[in-house]
Image (cartoon, rainbow, N blue to C red):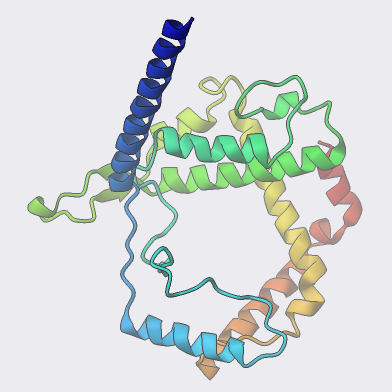
Length: 256
């Protein structure tokens, strides 16, 4: 019995070490593929400091940033890092969405799939179906962005191609949304995208009166005025849409 325990202990120790090695290799590979441009201009850093000082002076500030002295914290310019496919894939990327669906979403009680499909959620209550469809719509939105801005060739600084070649990837889009390639799940994923769009518009309509009254601070009076006008214009467009403002239409969309 003692010998068996010894062998089991060694096996588990070996298995743990091997899993750690594989995980580190995956992370190293995905770190190279999941390219992130962390360049921050001096002008942007000056803006951050000015915004922080403005927010700190307000008594009603509700947003507090993490410790900026922490080496793990960093600013990222989203204009330099648009939503697109950089090659970040594999086990880590799969785990992210699996965690979202399994731990932060709702699924049918008898479903064992990592990503439950729309056709299997009928037994869930209206609120759970609504939440699932919103998450699925977000997933579809991200996938469409990835397919429209896809890394078609690897970056190569030695061939004067540091950014790579980007463009549409129709084959990847079909793999994710084509009815024949997704067992008819693709069209429902796209429906959930439209559903999420409807939810967002409804939220804007409800927040409309408040959004028109708040002030914005960028540190530039002209930009502040442009931003306030743009937000007010967006709210006005949403309010003019009777199909969005109509609560009964929204409820009907929830049921389908």
